[in-house]
Length: 574
Image (tube, rainbow, N blue to C red; front, side, top):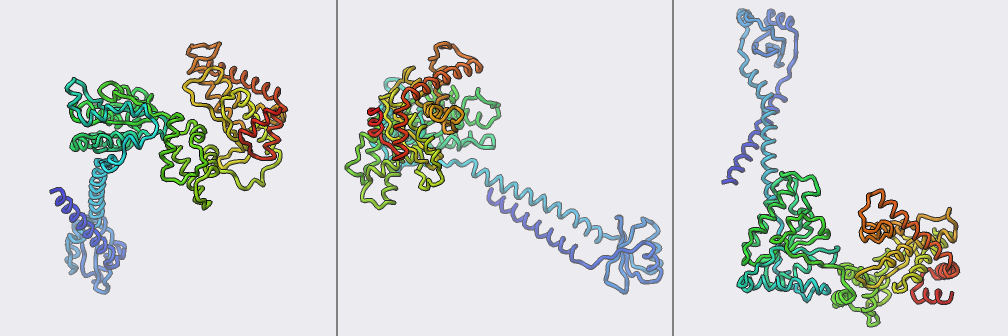
């Protein structure tokens, strides 16, 4: 019925277009029109030249002559006696119906044409946008869920343990309803990007053997109010039709941010979408076997109504993998790659502190690409090292001819200061590489400082981290003078300030401020005092060990790069 109606509208629109084009053509391609004054017209009429006059109520009247096919126009005198006068002269007179209608059509039809076109276009847009806006790109990834299980998820053992009962609940909901237990309606996976939150959700569906419906929170946020809520209802309708299922919403913070944190009125699209999501989750019965899993990088920004029991009532952290987790992840991604036997996976796992699962996969992939480009028979330590330092600092610049010797010396002392402070203050840290070779990411050089896997940092350890970061600038000042320090420490200063802000405000480690909540001005003064004090300590450390710093800098200027073994030898010989 709707399709037939649309066809009728389309035909009417086409007819209107054709009719308008015809009249425009007719009016624009007719006989030539010439204007004469009313006095000339009367002279021609009295001389017997005029054959026909078309009177009208408009501003002009038309007339024709015996000698020409030209249509003449003259001003309308609006004289009631004119018709009688012309008839007495033997001139044919008509009331101008054709002329008036033609003028009317030429004026009205273009307007009608544009009105019809406007209606037609609006209907087409509404029909198209309605179809696109109301339909949700939700894929029931059965084939993915069958192939993915917990055995594909390396690391995150604690997270897997936290969701084991959910898998059993989806498979056998009646087993738990006997005890009066209900399935968690929602689970939130939170943690840094690339830690495997989506993979874990797929593994749950795969272990339970149920369809997996995946979408993103940004898919629900639209310009038109009500569209997001409709998409939410459509998603849950599809899941219910499938029976037992897993619904996965990535980037839930796109639609579920706290309503108290922004200017969100009652008619706001995001507000309506969030309300629809909450209502759908509340409508689950305990035996349906449907669980909603959401993922976010910012748990603290979510609305409290989402996190209360009965909604997303279980929160599982998917964090960065520990040493054992990194080793398992590397082993998983190395299965289909020809790694050399000389590669120590244990040592590689130790070097990749703070690497997420996605970064570890990328590390081995980049190494494989390096081996393929070099035509190597296998992926060796050289390819792994190149990929590792490329991910951390960028590729080495091949053309270094434009770098002045003075700049090389500044970089050598700067990076030497970082390495020296780290080795003296934090011997448990590993300095795997120090180099003055510039990278494509803009670094003039870098010093790789790898901390051990730890759950906590002490007050002194945080202070030592700041001193090590500021030691590069301190080395420049100690070597070249306070007026010759460079912009090379910009990133070090930024990182040091972040640690100091947490040191004062988040961890309450400032002796003078204690655990008190400070105003912005007091916090600034406190941070300024601490970072100045720690810079003085960095400067004193460098000056007291300046001979060792010079040896490290000279070795860097000769070799350009030093490994940890070479660095340890230089410090031990000082």
